[in-house]
Length: 275
Image (cartoon, rainbow, N blue to C red; front, side):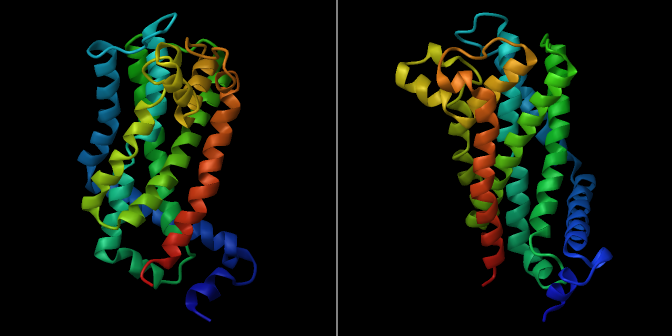
């Protein structure tokens, strides 16, 4: 029996499987957080980039086409959803760099719970995503956006946004392991952009050609954007279609379905690395 197996399945107390899994995952999370202190510029870029997009679409390009109401209040919730889908480059780069340097192989040879590396990476990403949400919310307030349905509804909206991020995160981790090399990340990242722009983030489906509007309404990001608009009390909520009327349901079911597919695929891919 290997050291990793002995450690993970020891009897009771701290040596229980759950205890070791939490301890190992927290160690890997701290490792990722330590990188923030050594790479502050990369962290700053990840926080500033979505702010630049929001300001650009608010004041330069324009957003909220087809909206009956304040375009800013339509645009900001959509940009919050878009931020949760984008910005996966840092996670994907970190995974591919660890693969290229042999760090993952060294971790796999240690008495560590399998998958703790991925859990630590995802936990660090979620912390950074929460910080990005906080920054975007502050900038949204500065440009005139407000929520109108109270703190409980706002917290539920932020919860849906983070759920979308968690789902997209496992897509990114799997794609990073498939890509294998940092130089391939940019090519893989391009595949994510159409998902973001083929949504109701910037314009209502009603302002689009009929077939395109239908596709947009069933985009998981559109479901989250519509749901958070409803919870925030902003324009652009339910518009009569089944997808729009059940946006809050879809904003939970779609990310959960993505996690159910990509999480086990990512774990299985990780377990096969180096074989």
